Image (tube, helix red, strand yellow):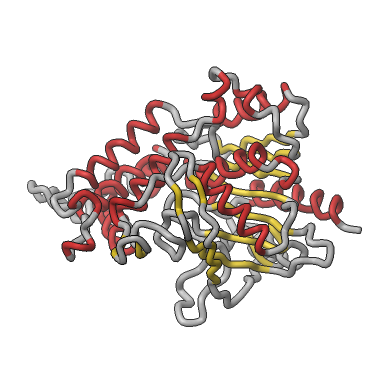
Length: 385
């Protein structure tokens, strides 16, 4: 069945280019470590209006980056990870809004991270790069917003780990966050989620090529560990029904091989995803991002009381969950909604019946996209003169 949105929202922001912002003002991290200087890679789409009040910050999840929409002239196959959501006529309409995507600190897509040169040693940071938190990322993003002359975001938007950043924006900078779109998210990770992250990290940490994070100095990469880490993570992004529909118990060949090669299509798929990921992602970055996920817990300082933790927020919220997302299940989103309602915040909540699991927030679903589009129409009416 054709998607009704595709026929009207098939435009793109087109060719884009990444930009770099250098900061020499020290950034004190939540851990107590200090980054004396750093760079942030970012992309922008659309035009910042004269009032500078139409800016939308899009926060990325684990393995994404600042490349949110469009494509590069020399690599047209590298389409932005949320290109179906952002562009002229799309739910986040770049003919109305100025969209900013930032690669988080500690990343491996252009912002300062473990692969960058440590100015104190002249060598790559490697395993010495400090651990980051969601709060640290938000503080760095705020400095970039200052640089770009954005005093207040019309909206901060993200899914999964990006949604956690949206929540943190509403707490760290309540006066700078008009709306927060928190999608496929949770107020903290469950023990099960932390466990999955730990298994993934152990795959990397025990790889013989890891070398305490200083593998670049040894001319190697812990690709085996990163490959397994990605395979573990990818299983959690799909629902059981989605795996059954895509792969079932189908064999690659007509009969079993009776060895440890990939007999089943799902095995082949996971190996392919792991291999692809290990070729372009950095293991030290993966370790740090999963730890940032684990550490995020606004209610921790309030004895577990999420309503108290979210009391500083002043934004209006759109919270979206997906029925088959078992990694960030709908009840976790409802916890956020209930805590916000206890603070009399303006909250819109939707639970989308979708078969795709956690990955649903990245896909083009008509109900989901029409909801986001309608919400941005509301924001546009609010900020338009």
